[in-house]
Image 1: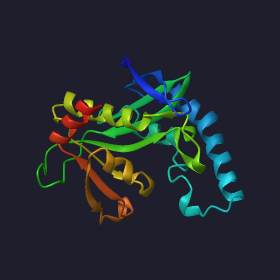
Image 2: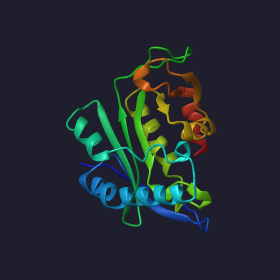
Image 3: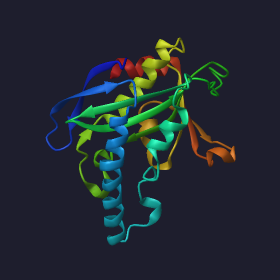
Image 4: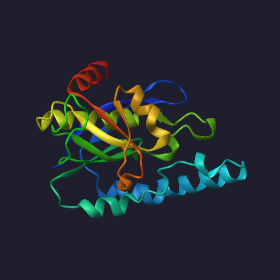
Length: 207
């Protein structure tokens, strides 16, 4: 059974609170939204960026992610979990996490963490081209879900992830430790971030 929690996002235009759902699963409805709504929105955004002469380096770096393939690769595997945020009848964000990784930061090296494989907000929730996102708080809600899962699993809130360059400041602002570029070519030298148990408690208290 899918666990559903009520959360609140912020309307990007008015600043008012918007009731939403956080669900601890990525179901077929989310993959349909990704295919029929997210992908066309990404395509339209990229066409506009091309028309405006924006360099490829500034295009959304997660726009090539195939969520249907990602979900199929881990289907039935207990070490992987999914989360999604729903509002206004649409999928506003998704995250996929893994439970088999260990921490790297010196203060917690070797201890189990919840590792965030992928985290993405719907394209209309990203502030591209100077536009206000439709909803703010989607990424933070998914990060909170990963921390809560870490607590539930006995990992005390510890999480880790490799960040796309465009998202690095987001994770720094959430108090995560920047451990620098990963030398492993398999991670494309992306910067690796972790959150300690103490930072997780502070994050949850603030949120």
